[in-house]
Amino acid sequence: MSVFCRSPPLMSVDVGRRWDLGPLKGNGANGFPSFLPKEVEKIRDPFARRLAQKIERLPVEVGFSDGYIMSSCVKPLTQSNEASPLVLLHSFDSSCLEWRRAHPLLENAGLEAWAVDILGWGFSDLERRPCCSVPSKREHLYQLWKSHIKRPMVLVGPSLGAAAAIDFTVNHPEAVEKLILINASVYAEGTGHLARLPKTVAYAGVSLLRSTPLRLYANLVAFHGVPLARSYDWTNVGRLHCLLPWWKDATVNFMRSGGYNVISQIKEVKQSVLIICGEYDRIVSNRLAVRLHAELPNAILKQVSNSGHLPHVEKPKDVVKLIEDFIGSGRS
Image (cartoon, rainbow, N blue to C red; front, side):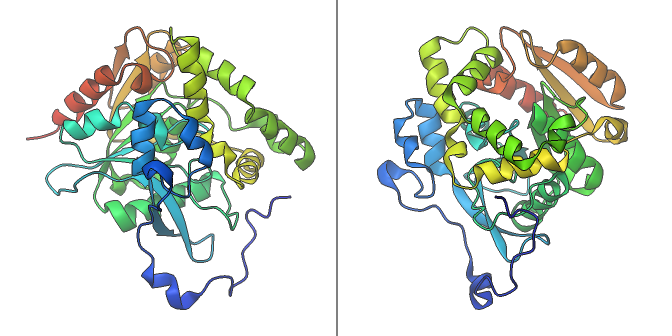
């Protein structure tokens, strides 16, 4: 069973080596980091393969776990003080690979783009089973920002990542210059009755969540007009992180902690916000995007045509153009 949220023994790490930690890429086969599941070799999508080769782990020290969490992300090619960094979150139970098609375009546009994994998902080292509740996810992102990014950022959150972005922005407004929300899933009241499930039932449920048939069905619903063969490959991309040994524990821990409920926080966001919605999103209604636009004090709403729930995967050029225009609108 899970040991999440329990404090590890004080002597569980070699404290004499704690300050020597640096970025970890690993040397796996075909240029992939050694910490990725071996199934990464089966992925055909060239964009996913290239981005996977760039994933590394950075040390992030948090208060809820002893020592560092080696945290997965894709760093920008260069860091500059001239423009705000762009920090890309991902959707529920996903990873930085969600940005496989947009990230190269953002870099080509000269933006300092960080694709980071939210604690509990993605490819971070969670061997010690740290707590993965909403406050823990928030603190982890804050410490990653404070240690490695260090400047006010443009924070991007798709789907449930939008809830994570709003929660972070309201709690750490000094860290966020602007906010971009893509097909935002921000009106759910947490994980609801799932938070009260017995552990055995919860573990059975997340085992189903990892299954290829369910993930393939979710892909078919999420994307608009994507061929079945590509959907199957994208399913393998989307579930790759689920093959890590701590994924079940992390997911159950998040689910039983109550999840995100940011409805009351929406009107507290003071930053400029770009809301992007896909024309044919079958997961989050466009009516909710209109509602969000009305409730945010300083927001604009843009639609991406002929796209579903994840337009940054389906229509990356369109999304990158919207991001460029939005960021550029604040430059002198």
